[in-house]
Length: 376
Ligand SMILES: *Cc1c(COP(=O)(O)O)cnc(C)c1O
Image (tube, rainbow, N blue to C red; front, side, top):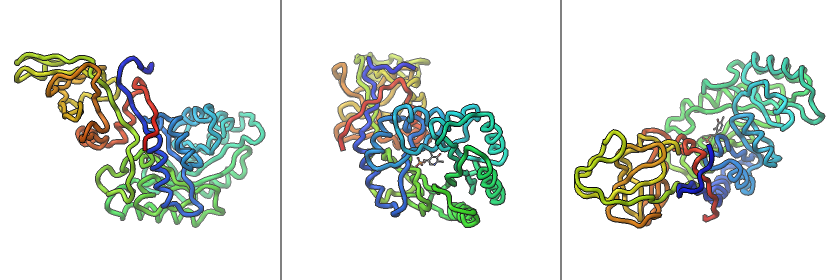
């Protein structure tokens, strides 16, 4: 989708906030621990390259992405730090993992067997061995080995195979952002048991997402830091942040039309809203094709510090709000961020549609330009 610059809808990302969030959390790192910035899904919608740059400046020494293609994008942009791909790749792309030196997760013996067969068909350049991380499923139920003895076998296979190196082991927690610690503890113990049985320690041991760093015991030497770097509370509102974080993302637009509509007139598709008196109606160029889903109907956006309800259905590219009075064309409309003394957080929006801020950040489509500032 082409990025649409000739309308006022913008994501504004404060890179200084991202850097500050990383630096504030460095106090939780042990001496031998380092941060890999998780920049999957276009840096959680913030824009991958700018975020990666900021993270690097703030001290991140590597990156995690979700797919092979995302890893290639970072390398093509010139990043030379270690990059780890969090999900199993299509083995047709194996040669790219070697060429671009992207760490891969090994999820099962079956997958490793196929990878070894595929690798035999390829010619690897010198110093381009495949870097493999064993995924251990300690209770997330998503990817990884569940049996310690299979991990032993996998290590033997990797040691025997050419052109590959076992560089890491990791797991992922399902409840690090929750109040109760029992399930987290159970996953942690399972992982520790597996660690203790390894024939040797690999270069990278990583278990920690943002929530594990902030509220649990972040063992290992790499922290996979995602959401907290963007300034959002990993738990939503369940757990209080032990340190203040600054949300880095704002979403703004502007009024493209303002009109006085008579009493009893209908607004939007399906005429779901009727004016109860003469009302000022403003049109805002953002819609569900921008990731601003129809469920936000009824939510209030901010214009000059006033809360203005979204009236009528949200269209693909535009929506209408009820204004308290007339405003000039081009007046700013805040969807996420501050307007005078009022503020809409990503959490407010997430609560309104019963989801999590992670999802909303990723939903903002590529049509919306990302603009970068340094404010904090
Ligand atoms: C996305 C992801 C992370 C980052 O999680 P946050 O909650 O955003 O810190 C870490 N590890 C894995 C395996 C992930 O998929």
